[in-house]
Image 1 (tube, rainbow, N blue to C red):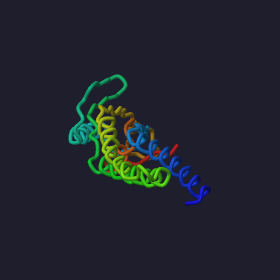
Image 2: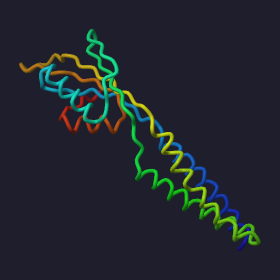
Image 3: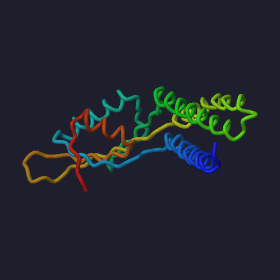
Length: 178
């Protein structure tokens, strides 16, 4: 193979490997957001619904502050089997591509390089260990002054963005855009 083609292939492989490394590392990152949601339900029934929702999602009440209407729920984030498998497969493909490039650079040791694919499960393991962590959901309910006669409640939730989307969908809460 010609030297310019080989050097550009090596450069692209190194850059893609760096990108894969950061992709695997980012898979374990916290994605905590704050959402302001509105409900037309009375405060007591809304609080009961929220407590029931989070209990069904394997959260438990950690603290309650009645003065500020704040409740903190705690739960354990479970890693995804699918994502662990996907990351392992992605790492295996990357290691096999790296093995191909290395076998072009060092043809005498070409038989040894496919063994790099045996390192691929480390990506799934890394994700699995880093993703299993305790998570807190901070929930605050306040009365909201509205122009309508029906009282509305403002629900301020600090949680993982997927949890916020599921909460909003399940309880049919409207989002307040800021």
